[in-house]
Image 1 (cartoon, one colour):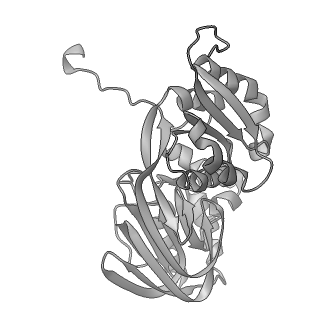
Image 2 (cartoon, rainbow, N blue to C red):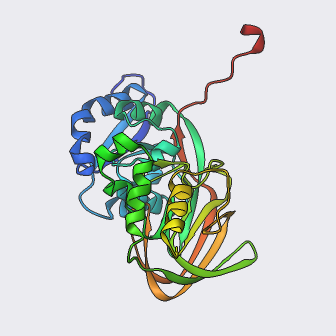
Image 3 (cartoon, rainbow, N blue to C red):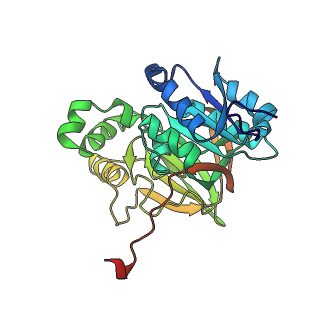
Length: 316
């Protein structure tokens, strides 16, 4: 078969799916340069702008196996659709990710740059990284499943206040959320133990960044270790507890607090007598009374930047 480069060799095939609405449509500014990056890396490129919600989830199981590389660009919703679609594929094609969202938590965790051209280069010239995937009842998530009060703290915090106070601004914004917020009495089963308490917030994560806040789930996070980081926040009873909770949650320190449960697990079940609204990767995950979350170890492969080898001692 003769390809456009005249070599007579079968070229690698890449499918580029992008959400034209993500990030205020900034992908349109860089589209030609992104595609040129793919072509220069030796790929025959098929381009598909998504036409609506659920598009990628529907298309990947049908056609992903026809390509050597899948590259997607968009925000949290696009990313979640990609994971859900790829989990339905028999063979898992490596994924490149060009982030066009607001917080870019997952891209930050994989050290994928926000610069779209640099991210596109990593998508075709990087190295494969097998990443854990979460199963939430019958749905999937890649970096967070959460319920409760603080799911939008980072988005709602005043930008000027963040510039002046840094992460302390998140503490102030989060503290405001603890006024007249609902709590949920839950029974939580993990690691052979049962926890029963009133909770205002909970997150099951596989990310070094949550809502733009680094180390929110702890400092020892590995995206391929088969374990989630679990953080459960008890209902505070007074303003002093509120400040301690927000300080430890949004400005993590190496000390324990009785108001937050933190642990790692590969499987967790959460039961509540009332339906609790959840978010999965920043998108609505439904109202659930009973939740079963499982870690699928290294199930989907993303392309990441190659790690630089440490300098040899004798070369210093």
